[in-house]
Length: 278
Image (cartoon, rainbow, N blue to C red):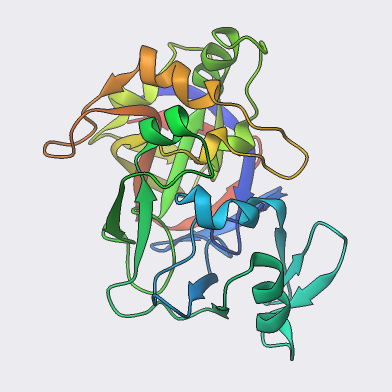
């Protein structure tokens, strides 16, 4: 039995891990995910770890920079409007100076690439500048090698979930960019319906088929400033209250919103494509 979930409301990619991304109207999807998504990252030269806003005390400024992909070249724009490009002389130095730590922009993940993920609840309680507990996680365990995704190739979230989080927030709205999805699906409901996509195949348009892996456990990133967007702790507090669950056996309970997915059949995805649950 096939159930129509909705349509692709927006399609997004983030060329550099933890930086602001860009919206596109169409994109090729391979087993690695959306073309151009998480194809670069910064490596901390001191620790050898991937720089990620999941550790906001060190790396929240990454979310004040934006990255775009044009003709295979990643261009990064700093808050003051300065632009640098990968493989361009002086790029690493400019990024290091802005972040206050020596970093290298790379398209090749280190062996067993890891990052530090601060405990979200401790960040909420102590603030983004505090030293809090963190876990070291290996990235890309659910994806083919070569990219910088957190776990799986594709991240999805439904508009019903976003609407429910926004309605329960004092602001009355939550911006989708805070959750950094690849596909925003226009869904009629229910809220947190992505919980039910685990193990199910989703057909996107006429070509692409994804398989839901498990609900996405949220870190502190949605609460942080994103470019011009101010901090919003309720972007995490609401799902922590309304959809706290164990997304996968052994992971422990987490605030969840959205779903991770793997690619069963590659192809091209377009804004407006019908999304069906098979």
